[in-house]
Image 1 (cartoon, rainbow, N blue to C red):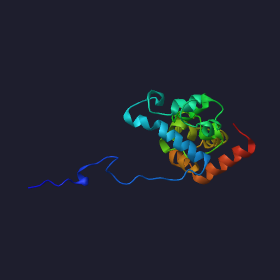
Image 2: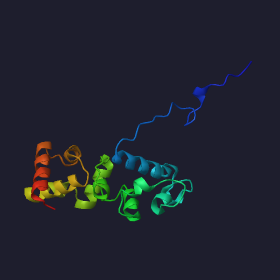
Image 3: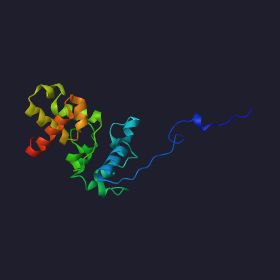
Image 4: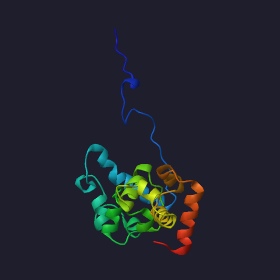
Length: 174
């Protein structure tokens, strides 16, 4: 009796499905791709991308190495802003760092809101006056939280959030 080897018995990156590739067409997509690659070692249990010897992260910080990092490095003021860009829990948004807007995940959005408005978010937002609420909604929107994310997190209607964000953009409220 012969044993037949089956590819279905093996699961993993070599045997499981075809890879996907997508063209990188915008600066925002390029930065998201670079961040994804650098943070990928976290899935292996490494907390700091600088601790992974096969990562190009250090080359992007220093500009020295095998990779041509100049295109990405030009999008940041310095190595500190590049490092902050990789801190997905930070309250610094992609807009603040690069002028490009990216969509935050709901978990990132909630963490940004909690850091900016405090542990009592979203209740504190609902308890303050309308003017203060609108300022806070506008600030969160400028930091990268979408109208729909704010709606889901706060229970405030989409049109009220849009009006608040538009008013803070016009009025220059902080």
